[in-house]
Length: 318
Image 1 (spheres, rainbow, N blue to C red):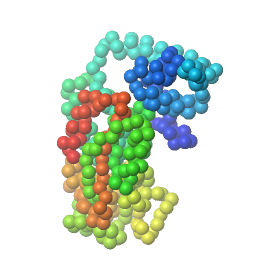
Image 2: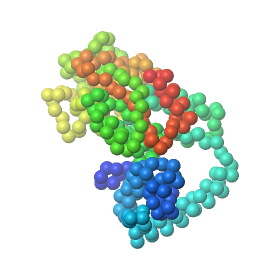
Image 3: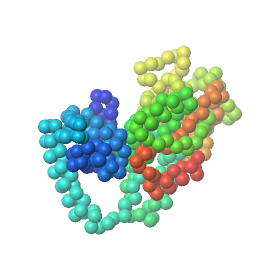
Image 4: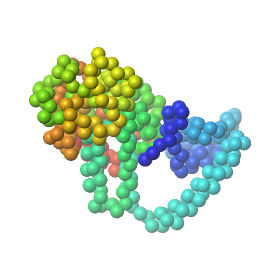
């Protein structure tokens, strides 16, 4: 799934659901009445409108003492999207509703996290025999982007993790989008190395042990300050003599599995994957920080049965 980005860094995407919400505002002439009719919070609807106006660079409604009314440009936009939504609904009726296809849907935005991928695989296996039509979407992004994707209705479920020193920032961001955050697990910080690494057999690893080896980290790492060399433009040999900054989890895993490099993150000792037996996790002795993993969703979106089952599977793995 691809996303276009505007200069402010926000995710730009136009969905039929959001267009329907904009048309509802026009129909009721009030954000409050439209929100009640749509069974979502007024703050969520206001945010959708704000994001839509920013995306199309047009003020759709002007506020008045009685509610809202379309601007001149807004009226033109509403006319066009009204025709579009009407056409979509006719297609939906002709090709979907009459067939009543049982589709199971699960949309997840997550930080790079092996356990959530394992849970996704298991969730698919459990549903694949029962359902002919499965619609799963899974996107890996940094925590801040995950919060935004769930908050703007792009995904229904999010998975984020961070340490105590970053908790205040991320919890404030979660609250600003009107999201619910539920704690899944707390993990001590670990160092990941390949199983043949000279440090693999140690009970604990110290900073001094890591000096000869390359620190591998993600370019957009935002879990914690323990990933101190993430900024591509800020190499500091005093912090880490050798470093390798990557963007995707596949590259990082290959580097750990095939070199003497290391990564600092969650405990992955219970993870069953293609890297089982190849990469090992050793406790990091020089921090008292723990990595806390949360799942997030919108307050106006109670977890579906499929989402609840995914969370149960994830908890059983953790």
